[in-house]
Length: 201
Image 1 (tube, rainbow, N blue to C red):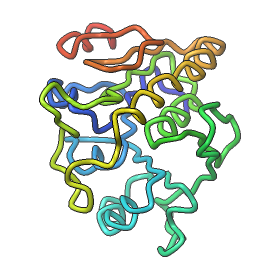
Image 2 (tube, rainbow, N blue to C red):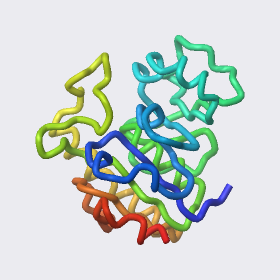
Image 3 (spheres, one colour):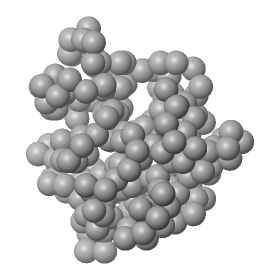
């Protein structure tokens, strides 16, 4: 299904500076963004702990959930709302194959799904690839199983560089991509948190 705008919403602290009621288009929520956003259309996760902890929430919401197959090993996965995907977790090269979302983190996997939909625009929210100015890990409450966050600064820096491959692939198929808010990703144009509505117009 083609959509003019897809918003991909991650957990980075910069989302706290956004009017979340105004996030446009079809919304792909990453991990706990699906729990805390006022609305979303699809949730994506490659994380086993998150999937196991939030499985009952996913079942209650009945929204399309794209979950990495290996994260479902201990869980029932025969539900109309659940789509399992294969993932090369060592690669940042997007796949166009149905049922395959590549990425070294859930943000890239969600972005791969948006890429497969071929929208005119993708807005990336909360893919900060760093902590907030005062060490904030997320825009929502911390995860009970990892209250201080498990991702280290070196890993954030590594991940931020991996988006260059996505930039090349999106440019090749004519997808306009912008990063909203404060992010360490440098390969897309950046939009202030207060100004994303103009870009989406």
